Image 1 (cartoon, helix red, strand yellow):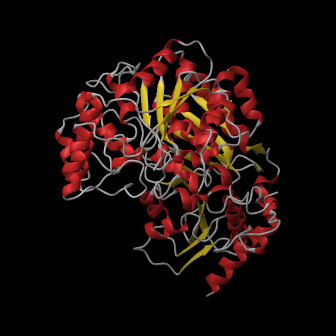
Image 2 (spheres, chains in turn cyan, green):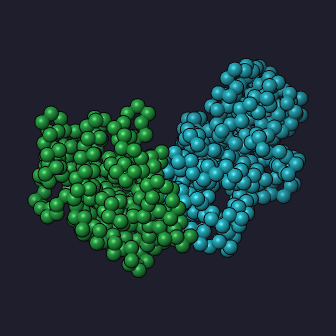
Image 3 (cartoon, chains in turn cyan, blue):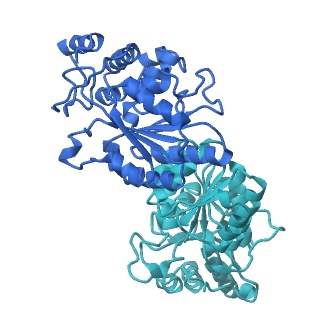
Length: 319
Length: 278
């Protein structure tokens, strides 16, 4: 279980997949032309969609390349297509189909990948999602959404559908409380938690919970910071990001990715004209994690858990 | 060289297309001419003999038949056919491969009449399966025709799509394999055989037929019959072709994949095409 700040510990926990496919169901009920393809990857939410649209939920088998090409063909006839599978398979096995069949032609295909970071950490590098952002973000026309709770997952699906262009939604399997609700405006695709003074911890996806824990621990040591949740990695809302760190003395980026597989380089690029007391990036370095990289264990080992992040920032602040 | 006789004459349309292909390639100093030549009769039957429904002045007409040249490197034949039909002005051929030109060495969707980008092999049949699935879901009558190379069938994605289309009974999908028996560098038989393609497709749930891929009458007969056939299966024609068909010294040769005629060869090539001297 991902360690949560005290405030969230007793809140109800929601499955990302239920929220995501609940939103997909809403879309598919309204848009009777839309189709969902899976590579033999199931979810309770998919079964619910199949109950009202059995002909539009199609298990194509373990054929990721064909799934993307078929999605393109469907989309070219005016349909919005959702495509679902495990991140490490549907992104890397079919990367060329994503590039040529979906992105070059800017088709409304929404890839919903399950298994961000170390969601499947114990299943070895075949199932880790540590490099996918790096692989996908270089493709023009592609939007990357990385929700951090059920509410932002719902928002991501609806935003992707509205865009009518290629989108990649990264979906976790963790049970987590609501971080956002209808009182929060997520339209800028970036959200700041806490006061914009002191420093900024910038992160995306479920590591937001590490950042929030670190923030609460640092507060007790009189170190102040905001936590910036990048809900849309590409295109990055650089101007909003810049405004959120305008008064920040330091930047600390947490990414559950390999060194070049995440979003930190995009943050660096966006903030290249600004100087800080320190600018630190923590991730899994340029390597594969062999063996059973159980998420909480690996977060502690590579110091991207909340306590390690708080300790590191404390030391960096002391100089 | 293969010991084989092709008994058919070359039709006027196919002769004109071959001349256009060669002129275009020579002008640009680039192009996969033999790969374009091997499927000329297939293109002629689809586009000029009433098999496919389309409107050159309205390329996006909703109920058009869809065509995908999955072996995108053979695009010079497609460009020649589309220009002859009026999808775009003939002048565009003169700028093939030029600076910022519309027509590149592999087709993309900026070109009127081109449905999808091809050129990396193994994509077309899957996209075609998507077209056919959409037609089935909508109960639309359009058909999808995909031309693949036989060497392209080395790609695993072709068989993913074949399996999917067979299972889904996408009976509006037609795959035509341009079986010229040559890849880019050698005969497929010498490095990865693609024998028995008809049997392979049949085992994936397809109706299949084999024919001489330069026999327009036979191709027409098969494709026309399929339009009224009540099968619930997709249809595959394995068309036996000759790479470089129409120019004697290019035919069935592994030397000419991207090579262009020069000096005296140019006149000889046009002479072959003009006089069916292949």
